[in-house]
Amino acid sequence: MISAIFILDVKGRVIISRDYRGDISPKCAERFMTRLNELEVESKLTPIIHDEAGISFVYLTVSNLYVLAVTRTNVNAASVVCFLHRLVDVFKHYFQELEEESLRDNFVIVYELLDEVMDYGYPQFTEAKILTEYIKTDAYKLEAAPKPPMAVTNAVSWRMEGIKYKKNEVFLDAVESVNLLVHSNGSVVLSEVVGVLRMRVYLSGMPECKLGLNDKLLFEKQGRADKHKTVQLEDIKFHQCVRLARFENDRTISFIPPDGQFDLMTYRLSQNIKPLIWVECLVEKPSRSRTEYLVKARSQLKERSTATNVEIILPLPPDATTPMVKTTQGTAQYQPEKSSLVWTIKNFPGNKEYMLKCHFSLPSVEAEDDARGKMPPIKVKFEIPYYTVSGIQVRYLKVIEKSGYQALPWVRYITTAGNYEIRMS
Image (tube, rainbow, N blue to C red; front, side, top):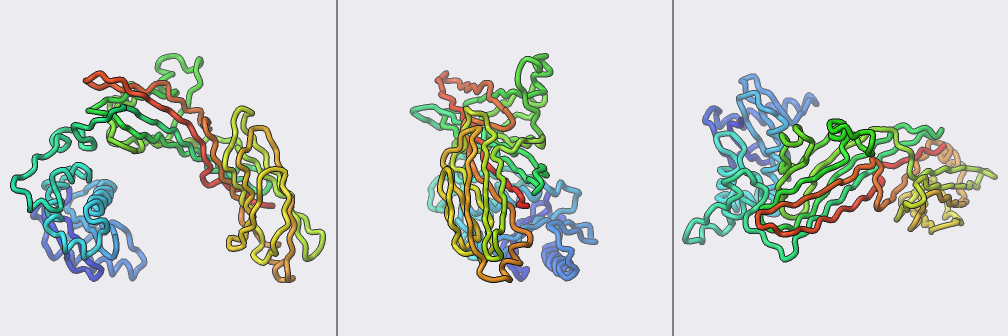
């Protein structure tokens, strides 16, 4: 639990504070600045500072401000940091920018928000959309106090009552990003997939959604693991709307969704991944001042899949002259400000191979010697629609609402390149 919240300027002066439990002195803000300066001199600065008096300080720095939480108990530090970030998001929602001037101009609203987001040191409501329903910047003009929305008085703080749409639709995108690092000898140094289930929800009322995936643990429980293609996901993180107890019990993802766009779930796979786009670069030097690249790009996808918007970024020496380029597919553009040649292929079908040849000159012997040094890696960007590396599949997406309307669920799969790099020999 948190004893107090302070917002300090860059010199440590208190702009606004709220004491929730009455167990700390207002002078602890001065002690915080003293400890902060001591640790900064010792190069031991951390976002969590312990004091000899049994007080702990957890803080964020935002626009030359310190947003500080003070506690006397052994709290979950990660939860406090998360709460402070949510508090900053609420302030930015109201004031656009969180600065000293915006706080002083709106100190009445700030105190109202501090009273609502926390009660006796325990976090309460941090959904900005819900708070704006009954804490308004011109609230002093109203004759009657507005009634708090239902979202504040029940367990669903992320969705308001009374939402209506003429057409009820829900869109689910399974987006996977491939991180790959290949050594100059062709061996894979790092490979992982980071995935997210991103939803856009346009549903009326208070619907309940149920999502089923080809989860390996679920299929093993049901004795169907050998009959279906399954995936075993790691580091799963859910949006707060998901009923975690239900998922732990029967692996069903059940939730009342927020309105609009949000990330339902993120996950990771660290299995060995076959490079989707393989690039080889052969460097030849016919003479001291001339260098030639022979680049082969091969799509290792299945024939029915096609990579789109492919960019292969080839590093060049900083002092290279404008290269002469020929390609069997796509276009190549020299970007001298980035010392690179960008080869763009709009559509790259599976099991296809394309080539690029280029030659350039190095105007000085010194530049030629520098070029022999270690070059940056080749970077690859791409998108592959209707495809996931992990093989994750949405088995069903059901929408249940008490009015009984029929909703249209749409599911889309896409794979993109994350940090996808191939070192040059």
